[in-house]
Length: 507
Ligand SMILES: NC(=O)c1ccc[n+]([C@@H]2O[C@H](COP(=O)([O-])OP(=O)(O)OC[C@H]3O[C@@H](n4cnc5c(N)ncnc54)[C@H](OP(=O)(O)O)[C@@H]3O)[C@@H](O)[C@H]2O)c1
Image 1 (cartoon, rainbow, N blue to C red):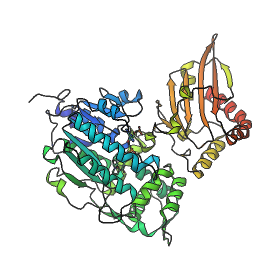
Image 2: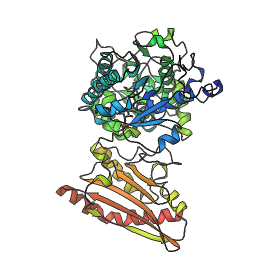
Image 3: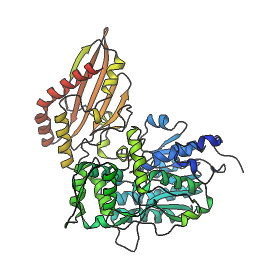
Image 4: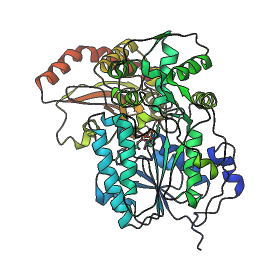
């Protein structure tokens, strides 16, 4: 059999204790050809890729929007830009693939749309995987007993599994409940509720039982089944070491945060109200809180332990998984996060150069300075997140709060890292559309607006000095949109004038 591993890694490499899989009771398989990881920009996919690379596999990462960040994060990875809703994209992405991980999920599209999108993507994927003679598919889906009334989210995860299994390519299905790890939407909801609220209302469904699992164990199972060929074509439930109610999960988190909390049983159990409140109180936007909270009414525990016969390691307890997630938070080292997965197909993802027109409204604020371009640009790249917007922070905060009330993403998404910034990164209610070091930072608005908006920072050489500028761009066709621009125009003067002065002073 030919040795297909990219470069057979010395055992020290994949036994490095920083890796999730260092103690996995199986070995990298030299027979495995090129691996496709779909959902690579998502939470689980982004954690899986470094582990596969460390074990010597050749990995192709499938994303809908490329970013220079991927080569930095995963040196040696091949990036395929593909949307699973387009068969011809998948045909190219699956070309020459031995095993494909299916980690695609469109929760951010909201409860009305995501299920139809997810099933269409799964049908295309099954068909193209067959056509390209892929040997194996590994899918991570959701736990839940099909005999009970499952939420649309959990039903959709099960339907996707069935759709993939209808083809001739053997599918391994791993079914998990809530995944605990820094950057996961579920973790961030629990964390922010336990941290911010002195009194927590406990609806009836918060007494449903769940078997959360740490991200480290999920990745170990994903890699483990790849390296255990007997698991091909089978379905396994995977869970952490304990079964708890959501109430206990909140209590435990509060205890770990050293917060005294009062829990009051609540007679209302409408998940809509609770998910709306959770979207206001946490950085996770309403479409995601709505889908996740509907699922909390279901018991999600492992129905069997068949996986243990193949991968007999002891998974983390809930408490251990949280402690590890908090460590990672502190390291400012979150590689992938739910908010990184804003769909590029979304109408908000229209790029400034794709507008096909010059934006109708703009203003321009600038100053001239002797400071070097590199230090001005470093200072620009620190805006938002924990550092705030350097001045008039209350105005930015208010705009974010209004956005949350309107079910937008608000500003509490913050930044993944204060130290680094890359194309596609989130900064509060913005996203980095373009970044040219020492010259230009272009942000695209992802807040609710009656139009489309961008914010461009530039540093230009002007004689022996530098011109630092900021320009908001806005495009709208509606009357409300125009009104919005003129209402906010007077504030621009304070906000952007002060902002560039502060950037200059801090550089
Ligand atoms: N996170 C959890 O707590 C949890 C728990 C149990 C099971 N799971 C399962 O684990 C899997 C991965 O979840 P996750 O948390 O990593 O999800 P995620 O962070 O929301 O990522 C979803 C990924 O799907 C991609 N995607 C969506 N629509 C696509 C399309 N049409 N074409 C190509 N890519 C598309 C997104 O790419 P873009 O960046 O382009 O949007 C993103 O990379 C899912 O099947 C989920 O059900 C997750």
